Image 1: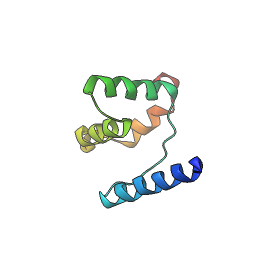
Image 2 (image 1 turned 45 degrees about the vertical axis):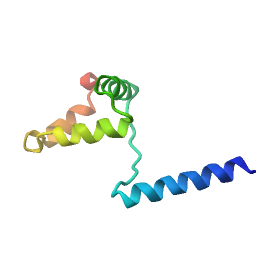
Image 3 (image 1 turned 45 degrees about the horizontal axis):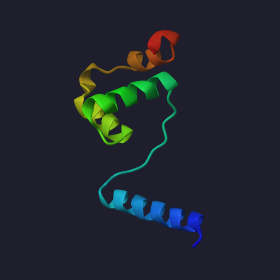
Amino acid sequence: MDAPKDKAAGNARMRARHRAQGLTSIEAVLHRDDVASLDALKAQLGASSRSEVLRALIAKADRADLSPADVARLSQPSAA
């Protein structure tokens, strides 16, 4: 069997299952310190994936408290 074709087919099936569940894949560019924080939270929470951690953080975020200034602070070196 051709392993790359099998893997591609498996990935396609996984994406189809995710879409059926209302999930969408995205790509995020994060600093390695942010990825380390995600991984630490993943371990702390017993989450199965970084995606689970991100969904939990979004669910817990108080959107009324977020502002453009919060985003601006992310570009500063001290944000990490």
